[in-house]
Length: 392
Image (cartoon, rainbow, N blue to C red):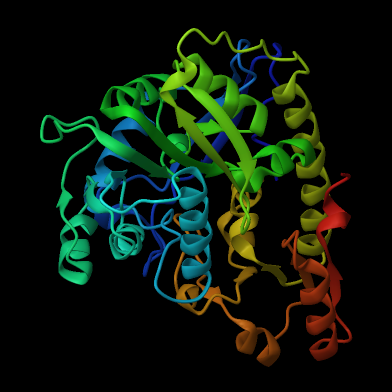
């Protein structure tokens, strides 16, 4: 096995290696039927002014993403009418109403509106809503919820109005130039208008060396500090708080930010620390896998989505890849594939019927619970958890 993670000479850039190009769950082990690659190179850089860790621009990645969005990327949409999706949506609605207590009659634009579910909730509360969405989800949103959706990228000549509220949930991290996007948002705001943003909080990942947050769809990996500095750098004031539910950051941005000079980054070298911790974790994982495979053992990865990047960077031969089984408790993933990986995702029933010799539980939040439950059905197998791989 080889370690494809290149350690850079400078502090501000890290060429991570080739990672799976994940844009939707697959019924076959390849993106080929969508005309998209299974893997693409991935590099990170750190913006010295804001401390923002970003995916270095790559034209091949940009072209693949443009095609994926047109076909309808479905990995990032968290809001649905049921289960966790509803909890995400209701928490964000509460935050919007904290920023604007009375949305009756307010003109509301959601950028990247996906299924249209969030807009339907805001319309129920009296908002005059419209969405913009480049993928085919927009047409489905109209059919499902009756909300008006413009099928286009933002900014769009089809959107000329000014809005009291502009929403971008899980959008900013997808853009190569977040500053340009925020300036366009600012230009779309009516006087006293507000923009309400949500992005993943990447600080826990960056502080622990967790590779699972890296995905080609995400150009930026925000912390609370870097998000505030980026928004203020675009001429808006920024109030950043953690989400009440889930691992996001919420930001209310207002037009009264003109003239704000964002404080400089504290210069702690976030990327250098992240690289060091990630490479250390990868070496531990490499050792665990090499030992098990050399013994002819079958390995299971539980919560497999959190380890597909690490698995790709090990550079395993195809024979070894077929001896690694992927597991997840999400029923929607059962029988699906990650691009370039030959074995389908299995569920807990599959695990119980035929447990592997070694199991790596990759869940940070629920790892101990999963380990306890798996141990009860598989007393003789070896099970490793998050803390066995990560030093933080």
